[in-house]
Length: 112
Image (cartoon, rainbow, N blue to C red; front, side, top):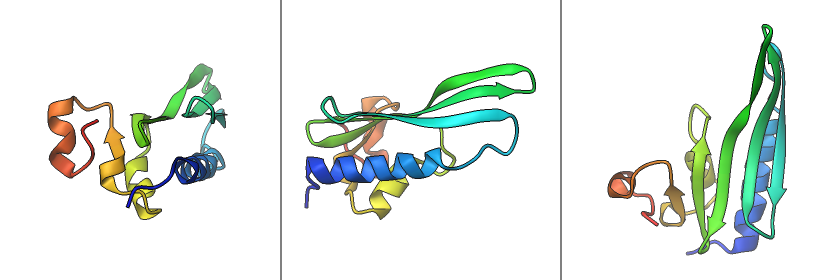
């Protein structure tokens, strides 16, 4: 069964919030969430310094488009898609958007 937009938002914000609370083991690097519910865009940013070098970027970028989760960027080890599945979102509602369309379906995820 399809998960509602409201439930998708709740799950994505929960997962990204959990990742944001994980402390970096080195350097002075913060993790911050940026959530735009109206536009359906959810980011986990990293920001700070590590051994004199600037660290800044997007670790996770998830969009809700056509009632599906489009994972545009996933810098986690296990993969947030797996986490979303564990929390009840079917693979048919998850798009691994960083892969070309022709190989997205190989793992059973949505193509678009």
